[in-house]
Every structure is written in C-alpha cells, then in structure tokens.
Length: 150
Image 1: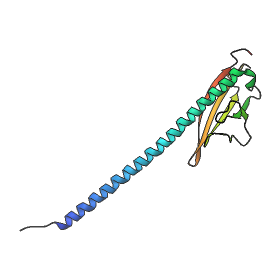
Image 2 (image 1 turned 90 degrees about the vertical axis):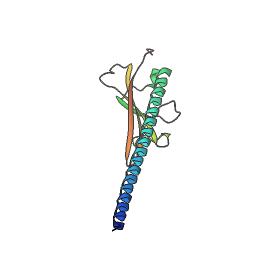
Image 3 (image 1 turned 30 degrees about the vertical axis):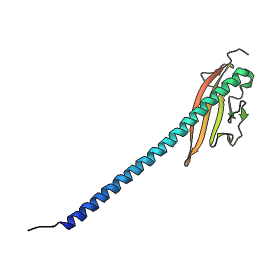
Image 4 (image 1 turned 120 degrees about the vertical axis):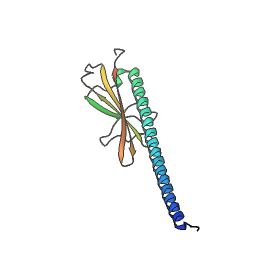
C-alpha cells in the first residue's frame, strides 16, 4: 500500500516561503540601517574636518596679528564660510554662511577659568548640519595665546 503526502508538501513550501520572507526582510532592514549609519558617520567626519580647518584659519588670523582676535566682550561669535580668511560677525538669528551645502561653521571666543590673561583666549569651533528632523553638530576647542607678545 502506497501512501502519498500531497498536503504535507504544500505546508513545507509555505513554511519555506515564510522563512525566506523573514530572512529577506531582516537583510533589507540591516542593510538600510548600515547605510544610514554610514551616511551619518560620513557627515560627522566631514564636520570634524571643517572644524579642524576652521581652527587652522583662526590660528593663521592670530599669527597675522593678535589685534584681530576679539578680547571683549567675554563671549563673541563669528561665522566662517568656505575659503574665508577673515571673521564675519554672526547675526542674532544665527550663522547662515555655508561651508558646503548644509554645513555652517561658527567661531566662538570666550574667557574661562583656564584662560584669564588678556594674552589668552579660548576658541570653540562649532560645525552644524541638519539631519532628518534635528540638527547635528561637532565642537572642537583650543586656546590661543599672544605668543609673539604684540
């Protein structure tokens, strides 16, 4: 007596299709998340590069003459666009000079407990860019001194 199991083969095919759909969905989700993370990392690295470049520009401004570094009031903000070698005062509504596409670069000079002498200023370079529904930023800071004694 020969027995055929036609219904059991149909159940096996449905289970296999379900497993394949789950695997494909998981792979697509993982790939999408990985691509989004890569894009965010790329923008952050670009922002860090712009911040480092901005600090180098401020150092060259300092080297050209300490008088071009603002000393008063205690906190002053400027915008620094792409290719600029001079500081431009920031409007009260923010910095709208773009370094590239959506990146803006703000330079902030402050006094703090570490840098109290008139020949010393703390500099913070803040680079911002929009990402989805919020704003991302990177901040680098350093201290400038009047090493030439001008």
